[in-house]
Image (cartoon, rainbow, N blue to C red; front, side, top):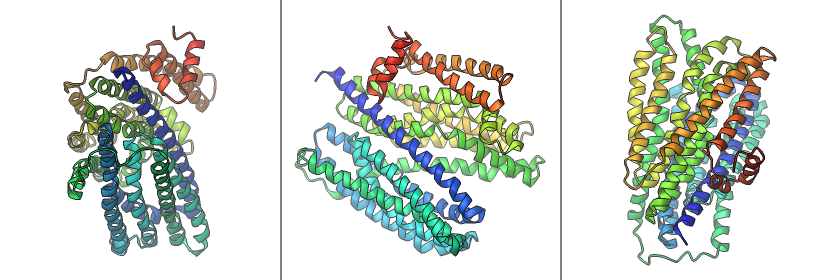
Length: 541
């Protein structure tokens, strides 16, 4: 097979995988919203304090135990498959199973045994049953990570996506159902029922992905004994997995630490410049609750691209297909800009109208949160670029570098938080500026590293210049249309209309500047319809 075809097939698999995972992630987010809002109405603020008190420790242990494992498995499996070593790929699954059985059982036992001590230390005694109800989920999610990583390494994203959706669906249904059933027994029991939904989802999600794995092994027709006859020692394979997984886990831990900088510094510094305790807490809530939740939305798509691109890069690098490697790196970075730039511009330029639209029952926060979001929103560009370039660098086999670069950004965040928040004219905006700077530093360092690699030769116009032009045109249309429509129709309708018009104009510009190509559309689910639209609008020759 000719090299161009290989490049196309590799890119097709990568983009299709990203699209599948992106769709699944959006569905998971929607299901999550359907869970949290009714749950709050069922168990109230008291029950939610028990629920959140347990969940915070669950997430911490889950990140520590599973953050880097699926990516590590995917990368190594992809490299072995590139050499035709099916036996070696299966060896990774077997060793990883042992590792995750131990880690899963260990973290589950840790949470269960230390739950009484944790709840007593936090003086949140009502979260004890919730914490114990969550413990088994750590075991099943850990083992499930092995099979998700294997399918990711084969660039088969459907099982990964299906297991995610199934897990979330049963988490939502089980959690809400049990919360209602146990509500009569008290908020502690209702919260425990809600958290046990995570265990229910994890069990069903594991059964689903394991069933798909067994079915694939039996029906694929692949000779899984094909490859190197040398039996790799258990400890050698384990070391290879951990060498990749540990740096990724460290990197995944940096973002929560950056959030901790806000939690520990912002309120204190605001009080020092004259804000009351209530005012400082309100401003911090607007930053971390309202603004940050909007900024995090585009991560659903960029995280899917990151997951999909790691095995694609690892496979091409192992085959020394440098033309295909450059093509996929370029495609990934272009997607980061295509997703991140319009999201950042749209959210920042229409910050206050968006806050008015989403938080219509909170008029007291509209102006201030709008100002925060207008600054914070620009961080989406850097966050999108950082996430996807991190996946690329992980595929290169250098997982520690993005972690180091994000740590460098975190240092900027810490210093800027301390000094900028104490400037009265900036106050809480200083924290938003610090976060944007942190992601900017990390993203730029990632990009510089990629561009200095000899085997990569990027087309700067395709990756950066064209998406910037498309976004500038979209931004002008959004601002002008919102100003005009606001004088003619109600504010919320004007905001929605301006967003829709901006999205349509941006899509047109992607065609006009050829930021998105016919080849891209051939690789995307539903791409044929986009091509027809372009032809109808005479945007393609």
